[in-house]
Image (cartoon, rainbow, N blue to C red; front, side):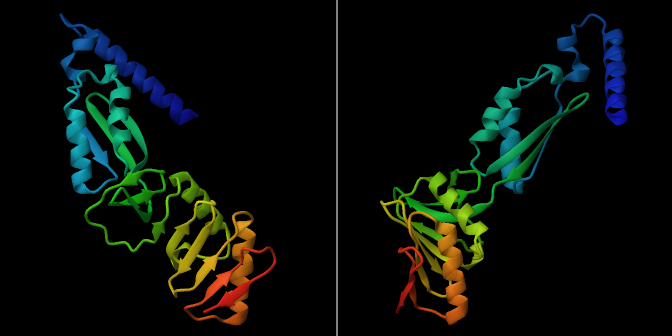
Length: 223
């Protein structure tokens, strides 16, 4: 609280100094307060520069009267951004700190391979080295995120997943990296996943098996 009050007092003194030093200029036109520098961090070098240039193109002037809504509109168009913070550093700097979204999976949309972000947005990326599972079928992005949350809460690791298969009945199948396919029921997926996990550990299946857990409290396995 003391630190916050100190910052407020310093800000008030700064404002008084500015107001007292303005001659033949309105506060809004004071050159000292004109935006001179924009700092963007959190994306890759090209992404930071592109975002900075778009904000520059707004031709923003006095830092006190910047329309943050215009800046937010530009930032939120970028599908790779999960969250962000806009800070004014007086007298003339704007700082934007970006938290980049986590890319979770790939999906085919209208013939294009797109990346699903943890922010629920799809991105077209031309160079990406991380190995990600592929989603087959046509789920809504939120349906996938909901299912991923269930998977994360289960005994399985997301890193074990090779592919997801979504069906019109809203049911999911999961293919693991060792080519074991898990056929899951529409409901109680976490319980089913834990049940299947324990079954796999017990039976020590290595690869190329299908585990059908669609019937409650029953598992059928076959090659």
